[in-house]
Each structure stands twice: as C-alpha cells, then as structure tokens.
Amino acid sequence: MTLVGVQLHPQHCSLDDLRTSWKAADEAGLDSIWTWDHFYPLYGEPDGDHFEGWSLLAAMAADTKQAKLGLLVSCNSYRNPEMAADMTRTIDHISGGRVYFGIGSGWFERDYAEYGFDFGTAGSRLTELRDALPRIINRLHALKPAPVGPLPLLIGGGGEKRTLKYTAQYADAHNTFGPPDVYAHKMKVLDDWCAEVGRDPKQIERTVAIDTSPEQMAWAEDLVAAGATHIIVMTPAPFDLGPALELKERLA
Image 1 (cartoon, rainbow, N blue to C red):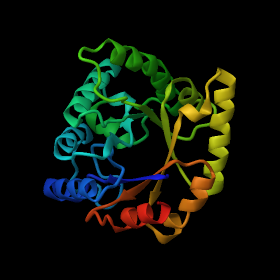
Image 2: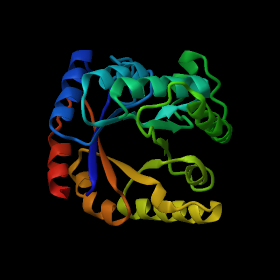
Image 3: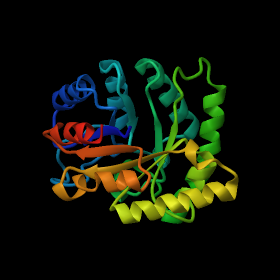
C-alpha cells in the first residue's frame, strides 16, 4: 500500500487555518502531515504572513492522533544538531511516537541573511550536513528518556554525489521530487550508493513530494512504479485536502 500525506505550507494563512487543516487531515485518515522549516514565504507576497515550523510541529503533535508528522525538511544550518535531536525527541513524546526527523542542508538565502546565519556555499552546507548526521544519531541514542517511536531520520534532496550518499549511510527515509523519470533515476543512484556502503536499500523509505496541479497528480502511479512508497501532496493555503484524499483513495 502506498502511503499518502500532505504538506501544509505555513504561509499566507492564519494559525487557525493551519490547526483546522491538520486536525482535518488527521481525522480523514491521511498517513502523514508535514510543514516546512523557513522564516519567510517561498512564493507569493514575500513579506506575507508566515509561521515557524518547529513550533507548529509541536502543536501538531499535540492536536493529532494517528498521522505521522514531520518537517519536510528542517534546515541543518539553523540549529545545533544536538539541540535539534533533543527537540525532535521531545516532540516525538508529545505525539506518542509519530514523528520523523526530516533534515536537509538548506538553500533559501533570505532565511540565512535575515536571521544571521552564514549562507556559505552549497558545498559547505553539505559538508555541515555530513558532519551533523552522526552527531544527531549519537544524541538520539544518548537522550533520556529515549524517543517513544522509531523516529526515522529522513534526508531531503536529490544531489547524486553527496546527498544520496549520506542518505545511504545514515537515513531511514528519503524525500525528493518528480517527474517520474527523474525520480526513477534518483532511486537508482540511491540504490547504487546503498550497494557501495553495504546498506540494504529496502531499509530506506522512499517518499516523494508533488504539488496539487493536475500534471503532477497524474504522476502518482508512475512514481510508485519508480519506487515511491509514500507520496506527499504539497498544499498551499487555503489548504484544500481534496487532492490528497482523492490520491489516497486512488492508490488504495
């Protein structure tokens, strides 16, 4: 069975809009609910309303009952890795064990500039992610009490030389984007990295994010054929859950 989730974009909306929507998604039986880790809108009015992701994730954990939850994905640059691990562990307890630890190297330059983080280069951010991953894993193993659930580590990104290698080395799940032919190629590269590092590729959950356009919704079956086991529908305000619910029924 292919899992279907929804990513609620925390921009150009109210907190009530978000809470109503994540409660509705949970009650409707969607498999996962996500938001993102940015400080400003990614599209539309650049200075429009926006909410911080980790705080939303904690509220989501308290408000929901069955769906898996996560950030798609958190930015490694914005927090000390050990602190991020502790935050995720605590939210996992709030949720009763339903949280993913989603992480990536970061890319949105305005976040860095406005909040005083060093943007560096794509290469330096990937090096920082590489160095952070074992620190995160070690901290999760050291925390008391331990996470309630499996707390899978999900890495987001499609870089073939480094991101997919780190996924093979460290992650329990991976997220990237279509179209299906590109996705199939990325999954082949990930499988090759698994072989290189001695990892069973079946240990890594394959998630893929699509938007609500008819074109991308039509990709679903081909993405599953290319290896996706979990499709996440990226949904802007006013948070129409219809596409994700229709996809879940279609793939049942």
